[in-house]
Length: 312
Image (cartoon, rainbow, N blue to C red; front, side, top):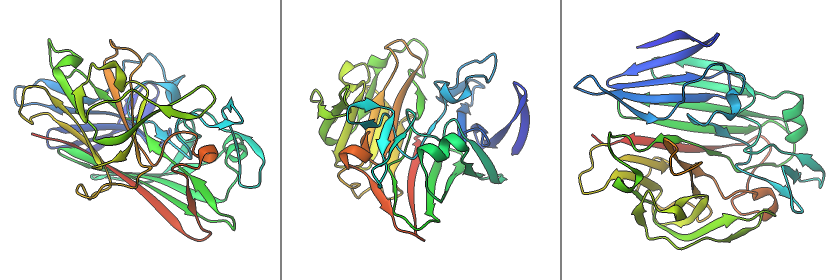
């Protein structure tokens, strides 16, 4: 079932597919807000966290849902100064934290029983930060036990188009009563663990095994590269796959992604009701480090596909 419902002065879109319900405001940052399940006993499990709000005044910065990170994720730097970058012509330009998409308006291109597609409408500040001729689309497809989100960036201009985008999924954790993060295991098989320092450089992070308790503080603000698998999993400890969340880059779950492909892991505090597992095209500050920076030729397009699935 697909419908629109009132929400804090706006109309959000709601999809009910099997046990799953998805809520989104596509026109506002192409933002998926919440995904929850109605279980057989009538209880509800949140998969993607969304907090209770009194208003939408600070909607782009709400810690919940899946903010879209475009054209670059996290912090960009220009010669040590954050929230700037150098474009291909050497011009210094502003670039907000996580880019321009989450605070931008989108045009709803399609909404039906399977999901939606929305196209970014750049305003003056977005054009100042990213001065190219392009079309950026966010396409969601929902199912009873998961979702697929595809970014499509078309170069409509005459210059090479740089980008290194990503997602910022806020997963509800813990998702069971009387559990803590110590009761869950996160698996990310990576050969490199990095962090970003205050000047935008990538530095070595504490080593982690492929699987560790979600409560391990070394997960926080860590970048995972050199992935042996395109899939990260969050599972209950003690065996059994029921309820396991898998986040994968691409639809081929057997082939490792490019070496610069990155999972970022983050949470605001040990007590926060969410934990972020973020699939990115590359690590932060790609315009300066060049690591994970993609270029699209004039007249061409490129996509980045992510899938989230829930094991029953």
